[in-house]
Length: 351
Image (cartoon, rainbow, N blue to C red; front, side):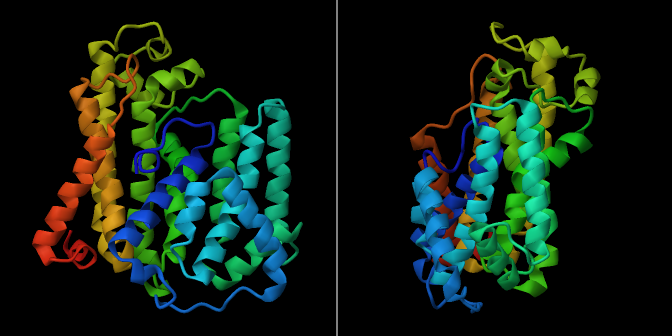
């Protein structure tokens, strides 16, 4: 949990979001392991045998770049594990373009454009290679994994690859949060076993929670992003509170001004509201993951509480939760669940 539940600043925000959901899987396994086993509904048609070489290649990518998510994937039955691996491999290969230390922004954008063309070919039933073929098999089993979800991820990657980051309004920043985190929550729904008839209702809260996770990451990393020349907070909000962009880029500053701290407080309240929206949808999830997703929400609320303790200044000091603090959040949530229903997985229904 120390390294997963609250991922730090990374060139690849999609990768951070995937690690966050790895925490969901690991918590779910601890609290209700049988629910993630072979007996868990719904039953899916297994991937065809000809996909095995591709699955081996995808699994190698998973274990090479994120062994933690690899261990988490073992908590699923075979079909879910294969689906998760196929999605991860696609994301990882696109991430490599953005994360690469070589290549100009223009070159990276061209490579991402090619990946977008490959994606379109995949959804026409003409995969570019065997890894794309593996994803094609997966989306045929999970039709809710539409092309628009992967396309949105590419939108977010293009933003990061382009270099300088600026947003005029919350609507623009919200779109970015969706592309790098909210979409991961949406993609996770069918993989976590949400039945098709509940997907439409479950999407909005899942996206809200994902967007909140990204916004919290932005708020805790203002100083780290400043070193990269990035300002994620919307210009319209800076103007509202009379904050100059130069202040958010001043890594030598001892602390944010009073106006700057009020700006961050305003954005933190926005994140709290998004988390509340996400919590409202937890009852739509399978029982096996409800507690884990609530833990994600509570840990990020705790991060916002720590930000408040620092008087909303993350320019001079990055916001962190200690391992004991994270453990305390989980223990409190588990105790509340036990008091509510005597069983963590069942009690999470009432959270």
